[in-house]
Image (spheres, rainbow, N blue to C red):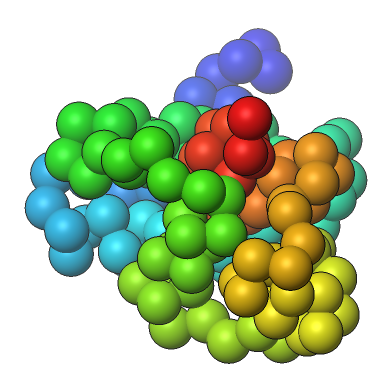
Length: 137
């Protein structure tokens, strides 16, 4: 009986949820999904048990799949990848609290500091990339 209620609720709300679970096919749809993922992450925060955590994970998978097919990231230092992502999304140095203070971001972008594993994982979670793209091996 409970399944019927769940299915009924899913059907009633599917038109709102489906776009969040649909792989983007254009850059516009990609940008929209990235923005929506940022909104979901703002609600879920770091709580992996949050009711939206699974949705955020699936959205990240869709974004990553589009990136791999349409927007491959060339091998580049982590600081250059971060700079490109920031430019693409219109972010300033103070818009990355998961990396650290604005001064830390500045040092990374200028090459004075490398992105550490914690920062790479946080950036990967936020932007839907593999943490490896931010690390310099």
